Length: 50
Image (tube, rainbow, N blue to C red; front, side):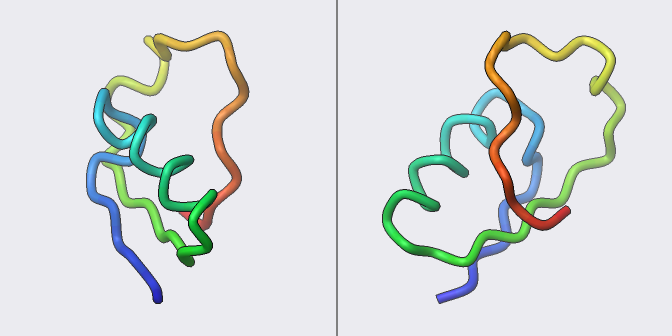
């Protein structure tokens, strides 16, 4: 199943996307990127199509 996650780089998206990927979903992330410079986490971003 393909899932679109809006706000992929936000607070919920950064937790939700790895959760969905681990369960075998095909994830497409959408984000405006307004806050991309202020990335909150030290871990690499999950691999999904932007």
